[in-house]
Image (cartoon, rainbow, N blue to C red; front, side, top):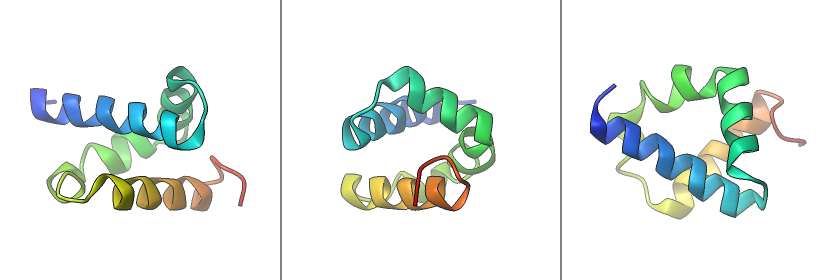
Length: 72
């Protein structure tokens, strides 16, 4: 994992925690256990990092709902 990807993943975790009003540790655990972190965020970095923060949060929370990580 490159430094840019690592920084982006930590940014996503931090912003999701703020957006969802839950602790960063819980966001990380949900993303890790569901596979979203390494099967979606990391490999999709090239596209995802071009999104606005708002769109990125909406995209990630929609995906988390689809995967059962968040309630519908």
